Image (cartoon, rainbow over all chains, first blue to last red; front, side, top):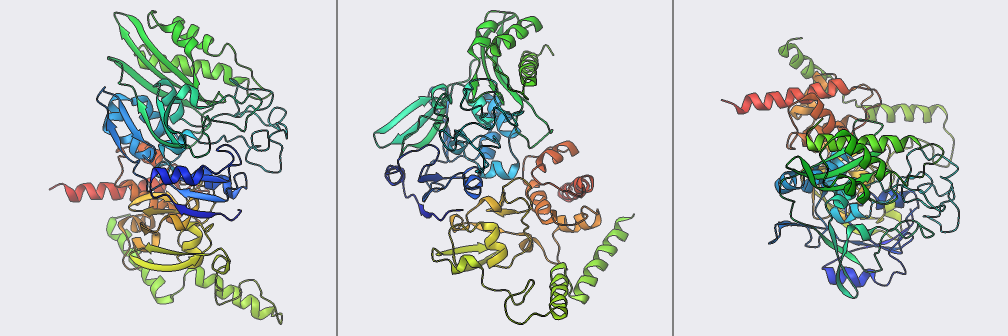
Length: 334
Length: 221
């Protein structure tokens, strides 16, 4: 690990100004905020991340979960995954988020990991984590070893010829289905970004993963009020029953009224280069009765553009079955 | 086996430990000393050399002052900022109960409590935990005064090689205060961040369930 200078941020403004002098907020940033550290410190030990300055943001007043006047919820960036998952409002009104969080990592890691940090969780692609191998995400222009290598766990949606790395977060998948908004304080003041625009597709710049610029500090995440009569859940399929990343997962939020799906919000995990909102599937579902054939159509639509690699072709079918089963459970026809 | 018998055996194990004053660590260090005597090479450090030298991270030109509160005791140190809480506990404070397994937050052998919550100490920079109450396996209980969970691990044979055990116990004790359901399946899910290569899982679950059952019985009139 390379040496760094560790400082503690006194307030948001000081954190922003301390980080603003970095040349990038993306891969290779010389200045990093550190919160739970569960991704960053892991990657620093591998010399994948080599920040010269670490700004400890754990003591910033960003640790609250509060109801909003419109019936929504605001979640501070420093709220730990455990606290968010077990919060009574989250459990009751945003079940999909609670379930997604509890399906990820271990209790120890969830006690450390934060909401802001999890939005920035890095891929588990083995070539990204191995500095002896080429990786366009880690070293732009060096090539992608995964496309011709071990790619069983990697993405089939949103890939490019430069990168097929999966976004590993479960929380992000739930937040995508919930249409969360990310609130950021930066050098130009405050702004907010819908989660669908927050993460970037790899394209030709896989080292750029989010819209964040130097100095940008995620302060909180807001959720819209839960849709009346909605049911939501998160279904995760993986190689082990616990403590494993998704091969495929589905976050579904549905409202059924008078025998028809009046509303559907769908996102997929484990298959996309970013948390994958499946709007095509939502269109297939809306106005239809909850039935196997309808769900299958939706799953086919969600995976229509899938581009499997040499070892992960199984994910197309797995993701479809995952979504169909999640929809059956959510609409209680299973 | 009757509970009385188990309890007798536990006490017997502890007594033996007390009398012999021999632990795995003292045994290994004696072994190393014996090895040294047998193949003594003049000059230069040798493997297993004693006494313990100052850790490298204290000698670092980048060392910073750090105060930690561990098991109720305050420590003022100078350490390299790269020092993880795990390395700090083991190398600086000589609290070697917390173990280094994977060093990447994947195995749970390094589990300690920070303000009563369990964390992977290998993924913490020690300098970031200066305002916190840290508890390690040493602070949980000692021979002769074991925490109920430590005693349950002994009586249920919840380990083989023992390397993951302190992490398992730290997780198990934290679990008692977490929203974990009553079934074995729930316990397994809550304990999935602690890997045991020997595969003592079933007995680990039994030990935890026994402590939970006991606590429940004591609570109810």
